[in-house]
Picture 1: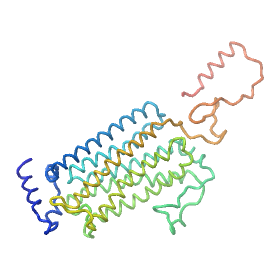
Picture 2: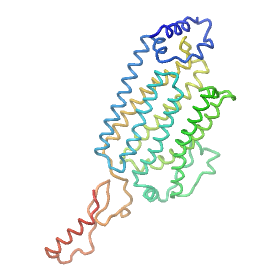
Picture 3: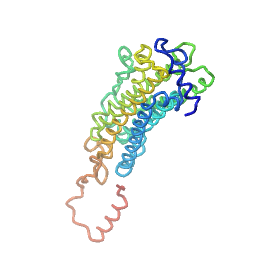
Length: 372
């Protein structure tokens, strides 16, 4: 480490506890070198553990994706791989945020954007399990989507929620509400970087003359609408998709959201302002909170990734089955993803055709049979 870095760290460390956290300490955002110098041996141990956690996340992703590519039905492969990437991508943002404290704002925005994209892909995967929008509507025939629920349709707003049975326009509304979130997040991130360069944006500064509070309100509103539609979609699917191990898959995905957003809100909006996060010069409460959040998130993502790997590697059918007789094909009935025995032909009992007729019938059936 160079002499300048050591002098800065020593000067800030020499601030006495009686003086408390001075303005210099509160505004100090250490570089990677200064951060490791301030933490000493503990910093290198923390970095080593974080590296192990991130490498584990990548290894789990590679193993699970390899299984998905080999054994999963083609209609589910792409969306499943994107959904599984949520754990190592957010883990990468946390790993870099732990080491490069100055880049936390950009890394946090990247993690939020990627999660929003994966939330859209999880909804697409849910519809893919049903076989598409049309089969979803047929499977849910006579039922009402659970619009009455948090975070956007609690009492008294629930009076305005749709109460008709499931129809395609409702499914499209769910898709639009979920899809708007990654687009809003992307546009807001561009404004965020631009305003930060101009000096009008300071991360976690809630003063009215700072752009952070207004950007936060826009992203939170967009997130709530997207989350509301996402919850509507998975609540309607829970009972129908048990063969796909849907409940543990959605639990692992939702816990990622809890750890990514709600955990950060609790720490940055409650614990830091209340003084629960200590000031340890030259480490300010803000830097301490970021270090704590990124370290916790890495460990939590490893656990969730192991859980997701277990359930995504379990065998599942191709698509969900409909009521008996609703999904028949000319040469058989789809049942649990496999081709069942064809129904009895009305021509049964007729005299057996000649050998030439058998060959001709076999050729025609081969031409008409769907590929499996």
